[in-house]
Amino acid sequence: MAAEYELQILFCAVLLGLIQLLLSFLPALATRGFPWALGPRDDSGAALGKIGGRLERAYHNFLETFPFFAAAVLLDHALGKSTPLSVLGAQIYIWARLIYVPAYVIAIPFTRSLVWTASAVGIVLVLGAAWPG
Image (cartoon, rainbow, N blue to C red):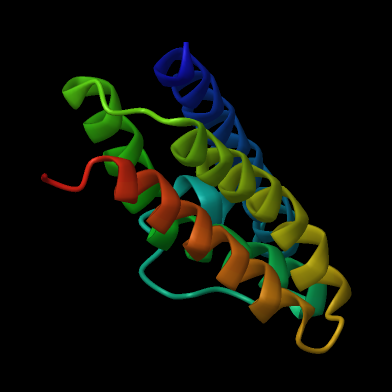
């Protein structure tokens, strides 16, 4: 049951990534227009502004953490080593990543870094279940 729950959270993380992709693309489209979006994007285009830039950076940060999370969940599943602690880690990861987006957009000092740290701890907890031994 724990492995299934971790896979459900992985599914939610994929959905979150797709939502963040859309949230980061819409300001770029609004600012830079369809010719930029449909073209080869050889130039970076007009600046996105504060909110658009923060949404884009939050999405890129998601892309930096998601492969580690996905690999850890899939390892737990493949090895049959999911535990209540790894499920807790997956829960911490997904909730932290959900909170990360508004924390980044609102720009509350230190909050974004604390939330990122929580998501990293979640990954470590998930990966800890797959530890050899």
